[in-house]
Length: 83
Image (tube, rainbow, N blue to C red; front, side, top):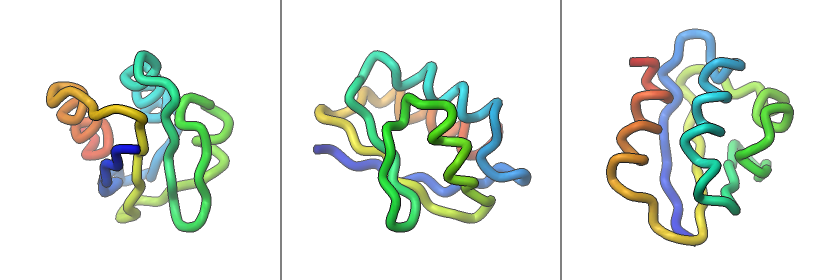
């Protein structure tokens, strides 16, 4: 597994719009998991992502079976940074 850590800088935390963008970006790289605290879930489930209630300032880890292309990592950084 390849792991990528991101800090959530979105003022409202990880809400529906960024969750939808994350799913859209990562759907081609299944299986993908996201870890927040001690919880690891499938990153391609909107409901599971929302139930994590990830607040601003938190760090999440995305795990994939293969390395992600640089442009995908940059897109994810933009989503987590709310740019």
